Image (cartoon, rainbow, N blue to C red; front, side):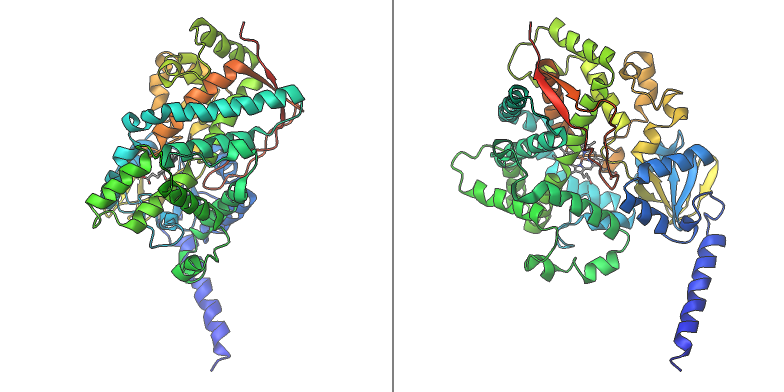
Amino acid sequence: MFYLLPIVGAVFLAITLIRRRYLSPISDIPGPFLASFSVAWQLWHIVQGDIDRCARRWHEKHGAFVRISHDEVSVCHPDAVRQILLNPLEKADFYCMMALPDYRFQTPMSETNPRQHVLRTKNLAAGFALSHIIKSEAHVDKCILLLKKRLAEFSKAKTQINLDEWFNYMAFDILGEVLFSQNFGFLEAGKDLGGSIANSKVLTLYVTLAGFFQGIHRFTLGRPIVNDMKLMPTQHIFDTTLRAIQSRQKNAEVRKDVLSVWLKQHEDHPDRFSEKELYGCVNMTVGAGADTVSASMQSFFYHLTRNPQYLARVKQEIVDANLTADVISYADATQLPFLQACIKEGWRMFPPVPFGLARVSPPDGITIGGHYFAPGVKLSINPHVIHYSRELFGEDASQYNPDRWIGRRAKDIEKYFIAFGAGYNSCQGRNIAQLEIVKATATIVRDFDFRQVDPGQTWKYEARFTATPYEWPCFVTEASRG
Ligand code: HEM
């Protein structure tokens, strides 16, 4: 009898593959061959780290819709953001993987139901509000000052610097100040303490891949016991968070930081905001808030270094505004329209989340651009693909041009700018990101000049759920301030 098993298995597999390829409601959508019956195409390009560029090439060839797996269509259409992200559609089950370190630690990010998501988000809203975050501005300044000190040291020593590392240290330390009233000490030490940064790269790869195999994940590394015994190979980032919380408990100078607001929320509503959820949310924030900021800072300087005409304009704008404080204030920096345009163009050219934000077609299905998608089909929007669309951003979509964000044209393209996502699931840390990025870019572009060691070298990066460039070493010099 057992000899029949392989035959039954092979027949079952063949039927599944044929059904997926020829009889699925998305069989008519063009796409890579492997994607027509499996998730193999996505997995391969996640491992390769080029899923953003590959998806873009397929869209350039086939237009608005590309089938990127047996049950998922990548969409790049003028109505896509409005109909997919701004509509309260369920998120794809991929997001369940975002409960970290394991499923007991649910967060808004891991919540796929839009109504439940709104409830979970409410617990965090007061902590993430700009009116609250801005109270930490002086402590953000401390970190930027320390970064400036380090850059000045590199300038004097005339040694090359890897900006990916230093911007990551800054972002981590600022997160520490804003969340826990104390930085992590990365800028002071000048190194990746405890391997947290290196580790978060491994975690991103693991989470992005395991999102497709959650059953296996839950029975293996996602089991609570694995986490409780600290066997998770990507444990460092959680340990970093836990250590920060523990050291905060002993800190006599704790301010009204983000954690204090969330702890109060937990005390007031332990039923709807459990201790596990609180810890999950802190993990989520630490995990989401460093490499994305490093990527943004790098994109700003990388593109300006290669476009000296825009660099000169941004510097002149700061000179004209007569901003002389050691660290430019948020209020002042947000009054610099060309600086803002350069930051935004940096995000457009390099969205730190260059991955398909996947939602599920609702019970009645959905029609986009005249094409009907049956209930249950996954529809995803990749910020990289959207941002490089000539149809949406114009013929010069692949060129760095901050001027596109100034004047009348800006309003037309604003609705397609999705570096922070859009709708109910959009980035909750945006205020923190903007506060630090606006201040740090304004201050550093005024006070330093960067020159690539090899000006012809393009940076490298691997696109997974997030992406952070590396390998474009620079020399830094202190700029004269007139
Ligand atoms: C420029 C830097 C950043 C960019 C471009 C960015 C972008 C994004 C994107 C695209 C999403 C997911 C949207 C989706 O899946 O539909 C997201 C989610 C999120 N981000 Fe950010 N992010 C940045 C910085 C930060 C920072 C600094 C923090 C925290 C301090 C943060 C916290 C979060 C959180 C908590 C979520 C989950 C939102 C939810 O599910 O409700 N992000 N971010």
